Length: 529
Ligand code: B12
Ligand code: SF4
Image 1 (cartoon, protein in one colour):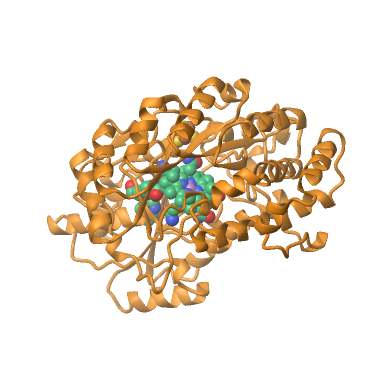
Image 2 (tube, protein in one colour; image 1 turned 30 degrees about the vertical axis):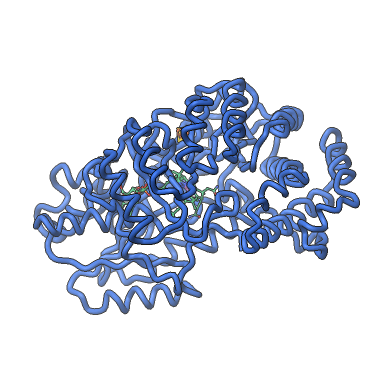
């Protein structure tokens, strides 16, 4: 009920880009379809449907977008396509940072428009793999291994409206796109981006490795895209998945367009630019939720993450948005090298004092290619075995989560980099932070304030899961010291709380230890992929 599921914008962008290439005669004739795993009950069904659509076409190409967390399940699917019959191309977040992927013939780093144009035009010719458009493609041929380097085509600046091939999405009767309840603003949301990359360089983030320098879509194209989504496709709410929508140089113009369109919307933003004036302008334009990458309320940690923000700035931004009735969803990262129980709890206390709508808590992940990843490789934590730890490749072109070794807690199949706390302890602190934040009557009231029955049901099902899997696990563990007293206080605050009975639908209680899942969201993300 509370699961998020969105169409992959990367693939829709590539399909649109190739269709534009076709119109100007830059690629040979082709047909394209988009297959969404969510529309199928099983992987078998997905694979059979794809094979059936590809039928007996002369050239059958399967293109897939990659995430580190789900790379193994994707590989298992790709390996079901006979390599002599289908050309398998991968790209996206994981391929850009760790391009050696089993089961793929070609792996593309960075933005894929130019590379796909090259594949369609030149594969199996002597020109394949040569020239600027082939720069991003890694492949092996005749015992020759070609290692591509990231390429950024900046196509978002030029592609005509609507920018993404939304028309390829399966009908709503087959797959339901849904946002998480934290960002739920309408019944038919759609995803959109009009900028790529970010000015900042936070140590844990890989956006600039995938997208290069920041780039923005011109206002007149954004206007046409948004009108298409609202007036032609009938979406009643929008989600901007730009890393930081505020960095668009024509933001004022975009806000005017949105004000005219009169749909509620969500976006991500950095704190440093949110002023009371900007918050007022966002609100007037229909903005109702903003995800702020606050990450920590401890200045040393912000500096360690190279966040280039301040604790005071965090407070100012949240208050400015709250004044305008915009709900802030704050990011909180636990597990920096120096973190310990006391530092995480004192960080959490500061969050609890902020006028937030919601909180997202994650355990610091040394994602491939990031500064965190490079630091982890060099750190003493892994006693000189870092190459082996991330997938067994010294050049770090192959990074594979290893859940058997590192567990399926977040970050899935990867080690953590905290020197004082184990991965299990970090995940316990994560659950504690979620419980202390959400198990407060004002937060429940805020999340359910829309009065829409389906939304309340989704929030309730999430609260039930948090109570069962989060609170239940916490109460069954052996806590000591500061953690023990926090748990006692938490239990005390919930005892007999009327609002909680309402939130839980009156009937949920923690299950036995064996049946308690530790990281349901990552597991669900994997299953979905
Ligand atoms: C939107 C988004 C989501 C949406 C997903 C919507 C969807 N269905 O795609 C939601 C909120 C669900 C989500 C979830 C997660 N996300 Co996310 N997400 C993003 C975000 C902000 C934008 C992606 C996007 O749509 N961009 C716009 C399109 C046009 O760009 P693109 O997808 O990158 O595609 C271009 C290129 O990558 C390339 N390309 C992409 N696919 C392909 C395929 C081929 C064949 C080729 C040739 C090229 C190619 O060409 C495209 C056009 O230029 C990115 C950050 C970013 N700015 O990229 C993070 C990001 C991709 N997510 C990230 C992470 C970590 C996650 C989560 C694991 C978070 C979590 N802890 O749960 C989950 C995992 C989801 C899963 N699969 O299991 C990381 C990825 C790290 C990694 N190495 O995998 C990123 C980079 C964030 C970051 N800054 O670190 N995410
Ligand atoms: S501000 Fe956000 S998008 Fe930009 S580098 Fe930092 S984490 Fe990545």
